[in-house]
Length: 284
Image (tube, rainbow, N blue to C red; front, side, top):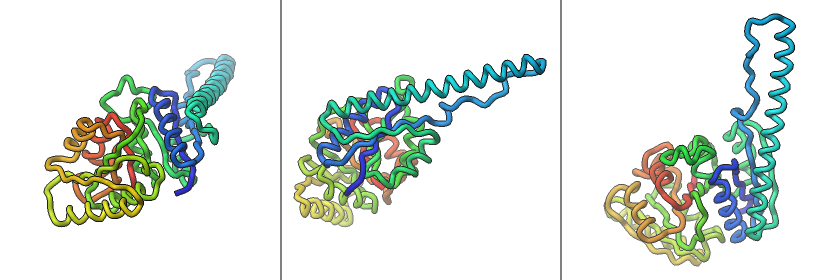
């Protein structure tokens, strides 16, 4: 798989983690890193008429002053965006990556992703954004929109980066779950990691065959994966397993045919991304 590691940074407390995860992937794969800060529409100057019903001469003067304020604000937001990118570049550089580019963009984040993701092998985003400390029980406002729109893998970074040595694959037998296993088999990122493929739900011949197929695909790539079947609900049992056994990352298919079905649009994956203290890689 070729392409850039595209890391979205916004200056929040999650941005440093995004940078460290990007560097980790870059060192394992040899891929370049592109750091992107997006000045969304909420950052643009407001186009409101604050002049009210005042005399024409005074109104003209006030409109000029408001235009100057808008220009100053736009300039400050650009300066802030470039400072965010400079800080992010320094973090990735300190982690030992030299092939780094930065890009400051304007507009909607989903529109930006749709324009640039053809260049990407993976898109990195923080679980929460600039209001993280005020919304600890909620996902970032743009995260769901990004994951809905993206066609490339999306890595949702946890609050802090920790060395990743083991991966839990949430496997339900659906098409995107098999694509997740195939991605692991083909990516050098997972070559040295311990991989466990887990299905949550009742055991059946179909489940057993799916896990056997997944294990065989990984073994052909040189990865000796463990497989398990757990009773219960995916959103609770997978989270417990991550905590109990210290998995460093969760990999999930974006769409499937069971309770792990609807990505961030549905309850199971929403709960996994919300509650997990480790990064979650979401595959389409």
